[in-house]
Length: 560
Image (cartoon, rainbow, N blue to C red):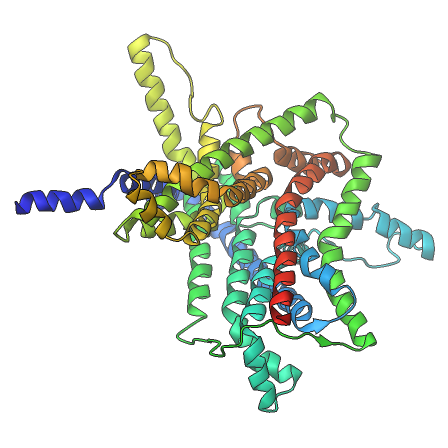
């Protein structure tokens, strides 16, 4: 009897959903395991020794410069704009509340291409200055954008919305009652900001900065185009130039260590300190109306990041696309767009389906295992695309050769590379990185559905799969669409994994833009780049609408 009871408990713990959740989690985390398994592989001591004695110190130095510069930049811009749009009233405030998220639609490498064309010696800015002032070459100094400092600026103006969104939410949710208490104790506006609001928002600011740093570490297009040697460029060179997959995996492991360090520092920065709003008053803070001069300064402070991060790059892209554009805009562009859309659509559909299974397994399970597995899967977004690509190619290539050898032994016909010769391995790499985006969205929405619905469904004799199909999916329709759209846009923008893993003679809009820009054909690259930006605007409009809707709801609740 005890044996049967034990089997019953084991069956409860290991339901089909839990087993499926475990299998999916193992497959999604396999690339990272593959990278770490090659850290101590021998046979490449010469290559690794050469890398560590020549370029590795430069990789580490440039990576630290990028992380420090981007961290300080996004924190400053994000906190300042969030504070101004939340706590003050000035001309254009409601517009900036949602418009400040738009730079997220512009990939950093697209920003790099645009500003290089705009700021180079023969670009419109320097040409205009020479015409106005009569300058010639050598008469003036102009900063070179293609440096580590230029890369920091690109990342800073593209990624600050991560901090802006999280900091603004923190200011809205936690500020009102605490600020009133601070004012009653005689604290002025600046003292309230530094001693009350900023400590309350610190976890959100650090979390947003960590997201920005992980995007910086994962970038390949910007640093490659600017000639800034980082781990992503080293991985690409080790794989393609040196043909050494183990050295590429070892560099990937070092880059992954930087990502882990960012996550550890983000967690450690909180320490044991806890900042809680104990006030029962949860109304929105009343904005302080600024005087006309200060209001104009506040509007300018919010306008500049929006101008440099979205308005100017978008204008320059449209101008280049209309004036010069890609000479192969016709059939070639249609093929590139089709490749990009097929990859993005297939990955988005699979990501939403897997996210539903993982989220539903965690909802129904009586154990913590599915929730732990989901947290592990959620770390995939923190892994750079180049690391994912190396981690996928090593085991999948071996599996591909094994399948080909087995099939040839059975049929006498060599089928070639089935997985890496098509888009299957590339979609797998995308899922390893972007499944967490869909999973977080689905889990958040599932958590808002009361469990009483599950109980009512069971009382009517409806099974768990029918409940998912007939109850949960209709309720989650909007969230599933959002999750799929976010994954779709992320895949459209992804560059390093696509460059490493794409099949022969298979290009996307992202790889086309990178190839043309690398050949200094920036005007031609604008056609593919502006398409990526246009697609990236879709989720930004959704987020902006949610911000605007949340603002109206907060105002209505405050008035009541």
